[in-house]
Image (spheres, rainbow, N blue to C red):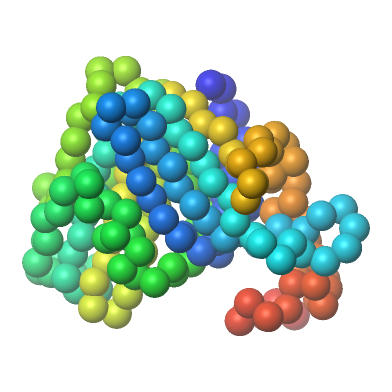
Length: 196
């Protein structure tokens, strides 16, 4: 799967401030799924009532995570190990927090090395599956989770399992953020306000 720099940037916009609802990995099939509630607008009308989308990742090569019992920048926070099979309840224990930072795909070369020696989980699932990476996190006052997948390809699905083309998904996110900056009332109710 090819992901251009434009694709990665567009995915960053579409996932900005998305709520991370769940993450699961199947060792046998080397597949992973992440579920988000995203900020998106259709070409006309209000934002969807059900904002969930699922990314299904194929040919997972590696999964790594760092769960630390402290603030994200506390270098002395204890690292809490957990099993791959405990990934979903570990993510859900944060209660669904937003992700932010505008960059999530193919940034492991920057985000992983500083924590490579402080891992709770590091599972190699195959010797391929390194074409791309996904970086996610959940940050609470008393603990922080950083999570990485390395994978070959993904699909995006709506709440009933229909595939969403990448261009359609990212266009919905771009429309939401453009509308937000224009004070569009359809973007209200998320606890954010434009600066001007």
